[in-house]
Length: 283
Image (cartoon, rainbow, N blue to C red):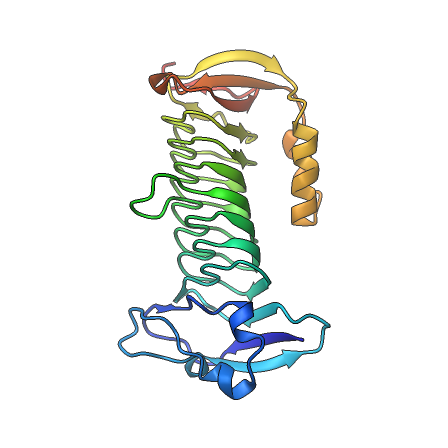
């Protein structure tokens, strides 16, 4: 049976939910779950799960699913270190959702704060609302950002999406400036509007820009051929499978111009842009 946690008291400062994974909470009795200690945070005292949430079981033939309901925008580190099982966040969430997750699934029906999927290495994170800055970024001091897994944001993300990305797939509805900076590998898909200088300083990897407006590419990218990339249909099917909708199918229609770079790094990265919209910062 799944476990549902329902918010009963909203904190006045950020509270970390690191460690509150399905494997840790679902096997517990009601009393043990409500006494579950939470990590240190900005909250001025140590707290327990029962200080903020009510608890009940749902008879759905699953024993690895944790459902958390309410406005969790002041709760950080949800799903940190998740390796298996699934979490459904029925509402908004705070910073660092999916921090260091290596497996399992997290679905958020609302928007999330900054640094979702930070240092992610596996699993699936789906966000139906918007995401803040530094989505799928590197943990401070680490050489690489996201090294595996898949992230879908149906809304918009802020600046600095997928910096230093090493592996994996990130698909977002729109984004701010500098997506894919210092990218090493992996795939970044932006279905809508994109800010300035995508792929700046990238070495390898693939960025797909499908928005209607012209993206401002770095001047150090070289234009290549106009093409219909053969892997696009496979990527569209994979996103439709992950997202459970056909919304991604039209993203990959049409013909595309590829730009190679970043030549400042002798880069072999590829930025695919719809042929009607590509322009360089040097123009």
